[in-house]
Image 1 (cartoon, helix red, strand yellow):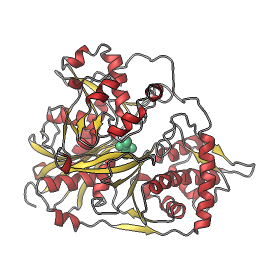
Image 2 (cartoon, protein in one colour; image 1 turned 90 degrees about the vertical axis):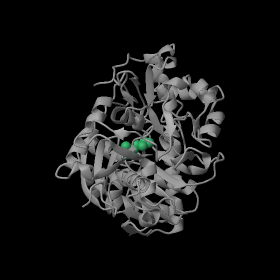
Image 3 (cartoon, rainbow, N blue to C red; image 1 turned 180 degrees about the vertical axis):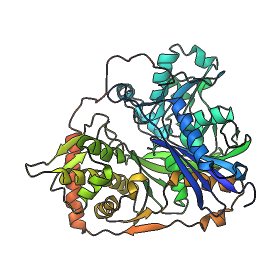
Image 4 (cartoon, helix red, strand yellow; image 1 turned 30 degrees about the vertical axis):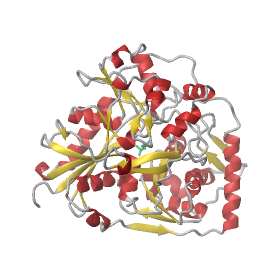
Amino acid sequence: MARGEVILAIDQGTSSTKALLVDRHGHVLASASAPLGQTHPRPGWVEQSPAEVLASVTAATRSCLDGHDPALVAAVGISNQRESMLLWERSTGEPVTPIISWQDRRTAARCASLVADGFGETVRDVTGLPLDPMFSATKGAWLLDHADPDRSRSRNGDLCLGTVDSWLLSRFGGEHLIEIGNAARTQLLDARAGRWDPGLLEVFGIPSQVLPRVVASTGPFPTVRGLPPLPDGVPVAAVLGDSHAALFAHAGWRPGRVKATYGTGSSVMALSQDTTAADTGLCRTIAWATGTESGAIAHAVEGNILSAGSTLRWLAETVGRTPAELADLADGASSDGVHLVPAFGGLAAPWWDSNAQATLVGMTLATRLPQIARAALESIAFQVEDVVAAAGPHEVLLADGGAAANPTLMQIQADISGRKVHQSLVSDLSAIGAAHLAGLTCGLWTQSELEEFDRPVRVFSPRTGAAERRRTRTAWHQAVARARATDQPTCDKPTDPPLTGGTP
Ligand SMILES: O=P(O)(O)OC[C@H](O)CO
């Protein structure tokens, strides 16, 4: 193989970092993964260590390149968990705070008060996103309230606020940047224009000087330094949010495509040039951009589900089984009217209800673990269908992500949705998508070669009738209504503990 003929793709996710080597035909030559932990300092709080994130990127890269000549790497593509936010010192690059995870709900009360003050509509109109603690803006404000209460260090340019892509680009490239799709998820970006919105920076109390510079998904990005055994100077050719990268890997630029990524949570996304606000409970966002001028921006609609794979993990840990054992129990079982609404941190799309509480309904003395396991799997499929239905008419749903490897879940999804489900037979689609865009950007392949890449799927067809589907979705919606019948936020605590700093 000639030198400079492979892409190193890095997917920095919530529970691990994955690294892949992808050859010029789009085939995966090597892959590796390094796990990543989280801490839960309080109910509803979720943090990660910036240092551990870097260490997991380094570890995954090192083991992926083990036995391969690092000089073969033409360029790096990065995909990453979105919305999570941290603060670091500009002069030293040292983290000042932990990473507040996208799952963290500590700013639920702040979001509620902004809505009460009448900012909900403006925020949704400018950013395409509902005012919800999942997005970065209130996390960033919370970090600044604790690390720079009068914002003087932010205004002086001493501090850098950023998402995980910003953090990686800063540490391995030395520049304070953010990719435009990631920026679109901060709730600070004018999603039509692709620029920070000064009015929103004012609303959230975030000085512009603390924010990264917005760049296209294809850069220009700095070259990589300090990621051994990769030689210093290899260019980063693409950065994408993980969900956006998965859509790219599904050839999501083709018309009529909608995908669901089943990870810790789930993200349903489809390209859409409709940049006006729609009252569907979905978000408008930027999928990717080959430039920051408006014509180069690919807009999308997206619906996020907070608890998908994490529902199964929670149940598995609670009953002392593995998620795979639960799926086996659920296979062939009926939920017998049991519904689990996994609103562990409220509900996101299409409900956007921070007060919703996790609820298990419909149990009788005959209810056993198989019924509850089935209800847990069904909860993922019902939530995905609620979003796909809102995204428009689609006959096929493209599925990827860890939990999508489960055939029982895929069949349940087809039965609940009444659509064909195309389960990707390739894992790590987020990393693949970052590789695909990186290879295109650095000229390793052309758009027409990319069109021809193999995208193998297994097809699951619905086995239920329309009346049955209507009946089960009505019962699900009744269970959702019960989960939402509360006005108590799950994580609205009166006082905050001090910041623990950037390391665990
Ligand atoms: O790391 P994942 O796969 O759970 O994805 C996290 C998402 O980007 C959050 O929006």
